[in-house]
Image 1 (tube, rainbow, N blue to C red):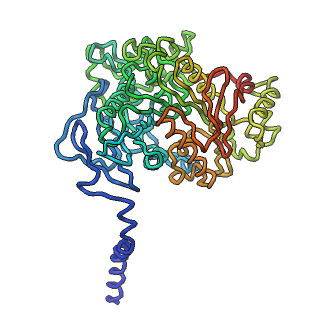
Image 2 (tube, helix red, strand yellow):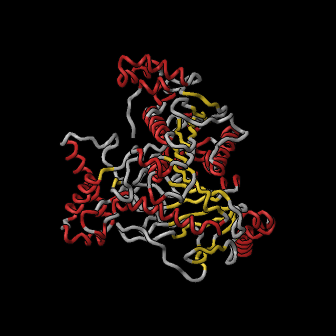
Image 3 (cartoon, rainbow, N blue to C red):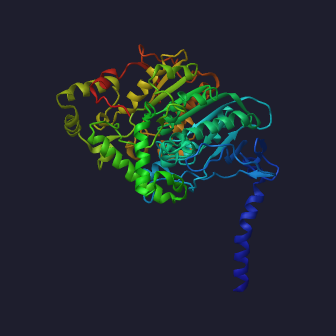
Length: 545
């Protein structure tokens, strides 16, 4: 009996070793690690990453440091080689996730990371290091509005596949968010003059780090593309009109970036700052005490202050936008001196080519139904009438004209107008400059969960990153998904390389102008159309984020 137990234990212990011994080639070619593997010098010291599937990977590298509510400065230097194998800390959230919806979490697969206010870190994927090659650099700005998210939040953000496919250097960053990135304390002395925009300053600091260091990681510091989705797209739009970011990037991609069309007025953000101090019981001459307040207490005061000021503004008969008063960039007169709609702002990014677009369905109304696939045409029309009244029939006719292949009654409810309008607005503003603008609309319908999620918000990201295998729960993992990802990711790479998304896998992609409305519909059969949804957008609610 004892002999049998010993043999069983030995077999369990040795089985993994025998398995590894049987396939040494696969093990050594997919992952390479070690103290002398993937070592690169930066201005602050050497970092060590690893190689996976021939791609050099570095995570959690400090690109700056900052005290709470202060502008970022260069990171501390170190001696020896800094291990950079795992993601760094993420910015603390004012509303931490404590529960999720089972179905949607299956689709998204969030990775919340670990929070710490010392979160100014970046990650790099490159096909070569220390080789003097000048690969295009793509800097990813994560979504989550200006309040949440991180560089590791979604599996689609992983940069290995797009780096390998396009021989580009992919960089992603964490930075300060919410009250940590936007609390305006500028009324309380020179020390806090920059506090209302430290989040955007972090992004500029990251781009400055890229400019100074990326050549050692195989990248071209003079061929940098910034791109982001949702709130990340809004951040891209903000950086287009940030004077201190000029010259730090040469191209821009905005994906479903409704934010960024306007900055808060400083008079409003100063009221929020004063309300926060009031909630915390801190007097103006004691403002430095806010540095010692635990984040949870600070966040609670911030939420109460925003609600208080929002109610005050509402009582004054003023508007705070469709989403209400939110943490975001401030028109402070120095760091951000112009509104994006100000003609003076256009000269800042006048030479920057722009690729911009949204997804067909974004935040779908039908997902709020128990079973959207069971919806009848009569039920769909009844729901539309509550919003469009006597314009309902005209709206339905316009949608059918724009999307003649739609067959589900729920399709009438799910076509996005808000993000699409914002994209058009941003493109029209940018089109006044000399640089080219290219417009897309991602229309591919995901088959996951009986097709309920369609081309929803975030769906295009795994296609742009060529990450279908990492995101099968969102994309379906079908051959059609892989084929489309090959084409979409190549368009993003081509744009990063040359400022033009055209390649042989897609139809000719014309430059967008307000006159031609040229939009590439990215789908199983991609096609360029011109003002295809103009009539539907004219009827729908005229709301911009």
